[in-house]
Length: 102
Image 1 (cartoon, rainbow, N blue to C red):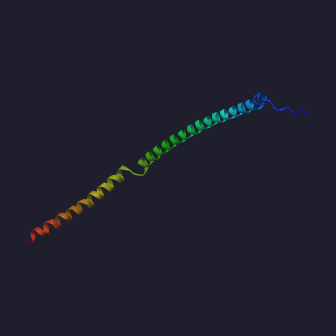
Image 2 (image 1 turned 90 degrees about the vertical axis):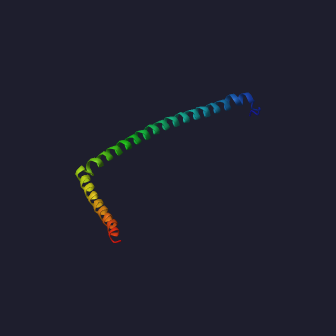
Image 3 (image 1 turned 90 degrees about the horizontal axis):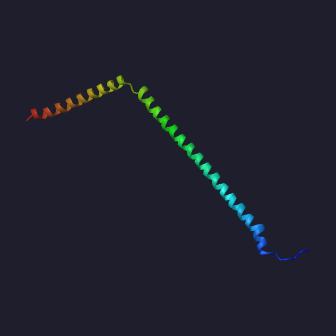
């Protein structure tokens, strides 16, 4: 049986340097893989955001075209104008009545 003490130079050469090199390689590869995944997710999220913007713009255009028509808007404007004119006439008639009494 060999009971010689382990030489420090041998230990560094045979164990520590390969272990540190393996750890360095593992960290470098993990970092590169993380960066690739980050870039991929960034591209996907930018694409999804653009698709959402396009879908929202298309929906707004669809609403503008289909849900509010020009004749309907004109009808609403005509009715509102009529109501406002009646309110104005009532207010003016109330202002005139107190002026007649004194």
